[in-house]
Picture (cartoon, protein in one colour):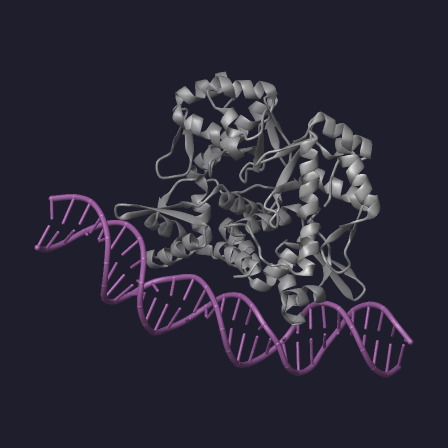
Length: 231
Length: 231
DNA sequence: AGGATGCTTCGAAAACGCTCGAAGTATCAA
DNA sequence: TTGATACTTCGAGCGTTTTCGAAGCATCCT
């Protein structure tokens, strides 16, 4: 298959409303069953099954069989970044005020995972706090931990040395939050920080959604360790 | 229109072979006429016209009327990054050996523009030289100029201060070259460097293609200023 | 074993979107 | 003004894709 045909195939897969729902629904990094994805997209199980098979064959998804369930997840960070970049175009820049204000949306806006890192108000707050304290520098195209930021992560027990393939510096990626329209911390560093928060019990998934809530313990540690002031 | 519908619409626009050809054809950053794009995609002018109108209305393209020609270009760097990220998924990682070896392809591989910066062997060589000399640090997610790199750019007359919105550091973005499968310099810094090379007459577009050739003068300056050794 | 649940395969109907010929508008050239 | 070029609009044909009911496997539970 020619290069252009592959390109069109991949884009077309993301270009169906049902499949688009599933892909964006998987953007929190979790693995969902075929049934959950069908419900999420508002289509029958048969239709979803066919879609999922095609996306898996094309390399967009990975599937893991577990009993009578089949768990589907995004195949790689590259796929997540593709979806993110399409969202960037699809989200109208005008105003940036998404008027949807349900109770569920509120939880999502407060904090959620964005594939492998933290987003929403939580993600933005952490990024802001790190930048404010001089631990992080975030530009439009890229970001990096400063020396103090590196030693901070070191103290927290996040092994920044193994993340980075280069010698000294830690380079990471900003990700424009589509509810806050502000950059937060993505890339390898963002993923490591997110994992750390889960491991230490600072944050917890809200059952059945992609939202995360900060535990009381987490609230204290985020404030003391990272200087994050949550409202 | 719901957020998901917008997402699907954008992706579907990129998901048609004809439109995909046009979009990737515009990835060199030039503005092409409707006729050129029709020829490039192998479709009639009528069909192309309809495609171009849809993509323009959706915010993917910008059109500029000039006499009886209509010049189309990608609407923004964000669109270019979306296309780039789709290519990332579409390009099979296996081997990375694209066997096409025409004379035109050779020129393209030697050097070309990638939206607003330099790619191909030329782009990779420049990035390698800068990294090798300690002027640049490139990670998987991000990159930055070092202090010596900043003063180098300063000496060249590239105004790094106005590029960066932060105080001291210059953060940029790596872009995985899809012919070399190696990162080169993109983002604001990459764009500024590319412009500088054009302005100084170091490189020149090969008529009618997206390839760029290095002028004798450019060859000398690239070697002397940046330490780039072109084969 | 028997029944329920989760998912896939099959097949056919319906809808959607791509495509191009023909005709229309705008610009340039002489 | 006349003709040529560049592009767009209109309309109809036609292939692709989506969709879901029905049936078929696979797995779990009791």
